[in-house]
Image (cartoon, rainbow, N blue to C red; front, side, top):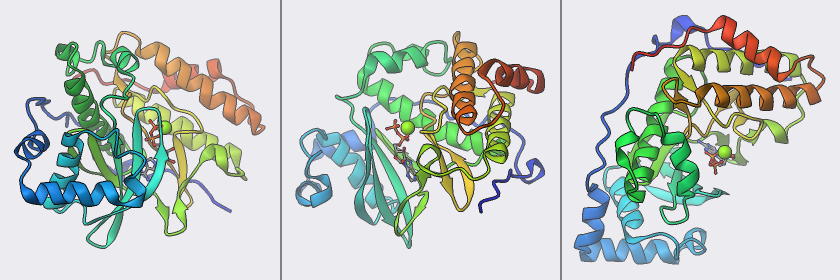
Length: 286
Ligand SMILES: Nc1ncnc2c1ncn2[C@@H]1O[C@H](COP(=O)(O)OP(=O)(O)O)[C@@H](O)[C@H]1O
Ligand SMILES: [Mg+2]
């Protein structure tokens, strides 16, 4: 039986201000795609013809191939594996790097629900200036997801180790085994819901304490890997500067509490929110 546990906070760095400067000017991937030399052309043809990319080949723009190419050239990816998930805005693939498996989350710039994203970008001091430039929004979004993963980990919340970011692609630690991706909390029989609930509650508290609200936390964005709970999908996570961060926190608490209440845990959204509010002192200094 999995005994979900927490990372000892002594083992992790104090939450820091490791926000990256957001540079959304022309990316290396755009330059690669524009130059279209023979090597890149062949790379793109090869990828387009592989089974796992066939379906998406039509929706990937040239610069996405440029970004994949750049990730290969920089050694973050050696070979592409199969698809893990096809979502509303992004597809996740496995890939090999050296001898370890990584996950590559590829945002489809044209398919992205731009209006949805904008709601989360509002009030984020790092993203506010981007205005209506869709590519810039997606590029910034991916960089923020990368930074949020680092920030969550620094706060003692298990989540995928971020590896690299290139234009609309995020490369991170792969959670899972050779037999497949880590299961979502909603896909497993939770044998010890009380313990699992306490861990997720502490994750919510630690994130909030570090000035972050996940914004889409539920049994769909928590996975079980190595008998531990991991939080994923931090692209929409906002800082406490976001005008609606309290509403997002409330919704996260409602979703998490509803899931665990169905597992027999005596909890509710309001109670959980009150616990987080009473036990976190959100940082505001970024
Ligand atoms: N690092 C990862 N390792 C293994 N599987 C992953 C990883 N990141 C995402 N996944 C899988 O892909 C699915 C979609 O990824 P997610 O980041 O939640 O994007 P979205 O929900 O926005 O499409 C997840 O539910 C999970 O099953
Ligand atoms: Mg998700």
